[in-house]
Amino acid sequence: MTQETRIAVFRPDDERLAEAVELLEALGADPIADPMLAVEPTGASPRADGDYTILTSKTGVELARAEGWTPSGTVCAIGDRTARALREAGYDVDLIPEEFSSVGLVRALDGEVAGARVEVARSDHGSPVLTEGLNDAGAFVHETVLYRLVRPPESGVSVERAAAGELEGALFTSSLTVEHFLAATDERDLREEAIAGLSTAVVGAIGEPTRATAEREGIAVDAVPENADFEELACGVVERAAPSYRE
Image 1 (cartoon, rainbow, N blue to C red):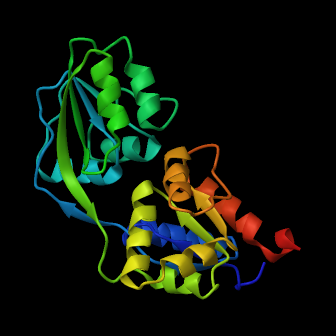
Image 2: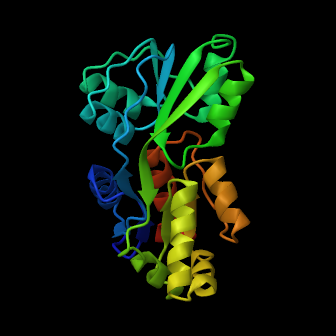
């Protein structure tokens, strides 16, 4: 592979983006870093009287800890990254679903939470699948928004590269990264050109909901990893985008 394999990555401009860039470079790709998400804390803290408390992200854990949150009951984490953040913050982790998703957590708790108070602490773009599924399981669900996810005003370099046909791959890690990418195309009046440019690239989506969002907007998705894991996503897209794969 050469450094001409240009892969757009949209992770927030923190350690997640730095790690993504490092991984892509290690894979021999040329990362086009274009953060499509930024975190705006609300200053809220999870309720401390739940029978179950669910954290869905490392960011949420860090913000809860900063607000002095003390957990009660069973603490649940969606995914190893969130669980690791909880432990590093000094909290116990009682449950991690086998499938790292809202659906997986609902399945893990189904039959256990009827009549229980369940606190869900996450961003303002959390999937309703989690809260609705818990409600259907008989839980009394309360949701606390710990942070909002917004699009950085400087985002959009990947839009221009896509429109010019200068991307070999793109890594969408949530439905919101798709929506914010398209908002950036509209700001530049380049939606049709950018989508056309992506049609000649290898487009990866972290999971089926992200794929559905992209394809609903006319972006064809070429790769979805078996697990909702960024490294797996990046490896799959880089491999397919490599010149030797395309020959």
